[in-house]
Image 1 (tube, rainbow, N blue to C red):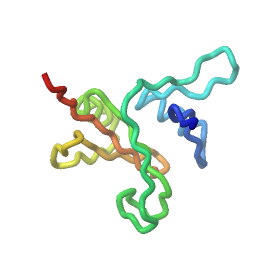
Image 2 (cartoon, one colour):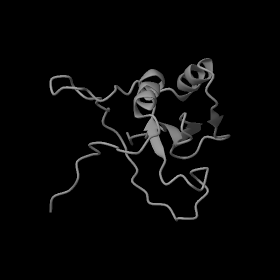
Image 3 (cartoon, rainbow, N blue to C red):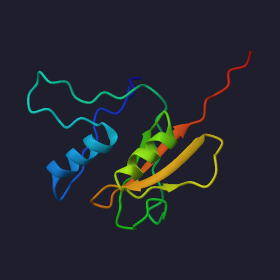
Image 4 (tube, rainbow, N blue to C red):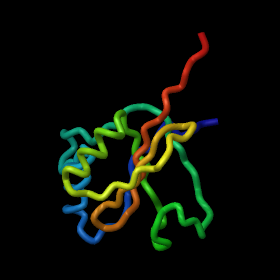
Length: 126
């Protein structure tokens, strides 16, 4: 059986695609979509990815009109949060470390929820 090897893109509607692309490039380092086929696209590091449909009535995404939420892995959550706050972006830190790591929540300029996740290092048995 063939299976998916990873997410090849995330496409969504925006009121101002150019401005929103620039915001993600500035604050998260996600390069804007190239205008030619010679320029490489943003490449993510390999790592865990959760694919999880939620119940339609979930409040986890914030505003009930939000149909999706991005979750980005980060190496250093504290440094990312400091960087965003220095840019005057509101960040909500999850109050505790969970078994799978640490989390924070931010919203892009159009109100789309973004979860930042610093995965917990998995200890390998000796």
